[in-house]
Image (cartoon, rainbow, N blue to C red; front, side, top):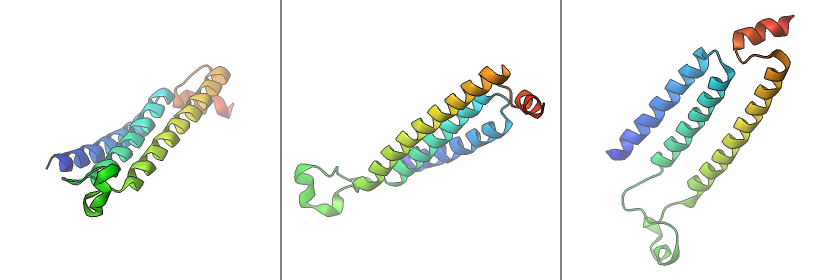
Length: 116
């Protein structure tokens, strides 16, 4: 029951941040909402892969492989976390470049300035 709540929470968090991404006017908020969406996806995948009674794939636990957790989803989520950090770093770099050029982080002002 507990992990069903975590799955529902991660789905809810994803859609709330997606809505926030759509309606946000500031570029900084957009970057934060993208990071929250990525975190919700990672949380969802990790909660789906959990089962009661599962053991880590270390040492003596390998003697009975039917109760050992598959390390592949965890490794993939670590890769997703690294990609999320890279995406945020690129977004912040683009935001800094836009701010230096147009002196604003508001999306509407950036659209107006870029048309000039």
